[in-house]
Amino acid sequence: MYYNNKTVIYRDGKFVKASESTTDLYSQTMHYGYGVFEGIRAYATDNGTRVFKSKAHYERLKKSSELVNIPFDFEVQELVDVTYELLERNNLTDAYVRPLVFCDPNMSLSRPNKVSIMLCAWE
Image (cartoon, rainbow, N blue to C red; front, side):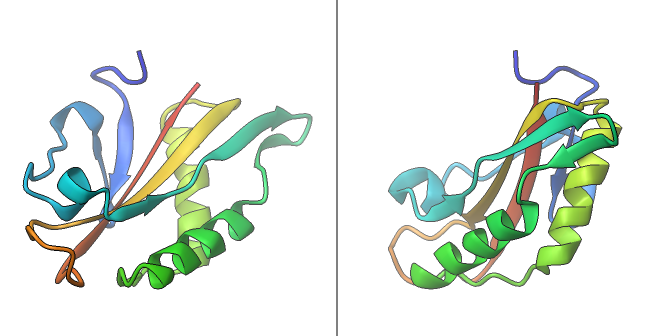
């Protein structure tokens, strides 16, 4: 299982329990795949947990969003910092981190009005 009742995710500026987070079933991302994501690895090292090329991953996430006309109003360094905090809150050292930018309800492929970001991680 990827999460349990204690698992925390980051969603739109807040850390929340994964089991209590929801999304709208009419989102553009759900219906059209109109969203972007990254796959990031974190490793346990002698110097603590290290996220592999985190800045490069978030810069690519931003570029991917821009290329498909999805607004990206998130700071890369803040997302890097949030990633380390997310891992710490979930007691993860060797982990997979999944940032996902997804759109609000809009049953067309036009530019979304509101965009959300979610970061989750699992062993």
